[in-house]
Length: 100
Image 1 (cartoon, rainbow, N blue to C red):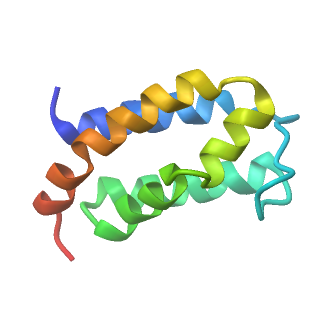
Image 2: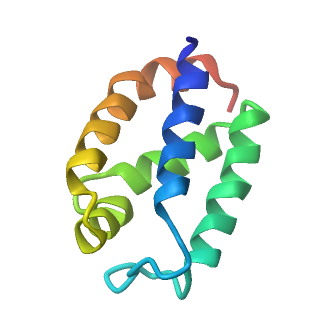
């Protein structure tokens, strides 16, 4: 599987965890719909080979970032740590292949 496809797979898993009643208390998002909309928008940028989309996801995956906070609040922090490690391991490879 290519690195870009692997990033997309990770994002799809994350999206599947964000449901209507996801606790977003420690984030700046007002609703899970807002978060999903922003993920979808940046997924499109990723599809277009735009680094801004990849950088958005890097910010979400940072330690104590949005996704870690959401995962802790909603009971999937162990899976988050695995996904974050996978994302981190391929981020730089994908970044170098993308246009500015």
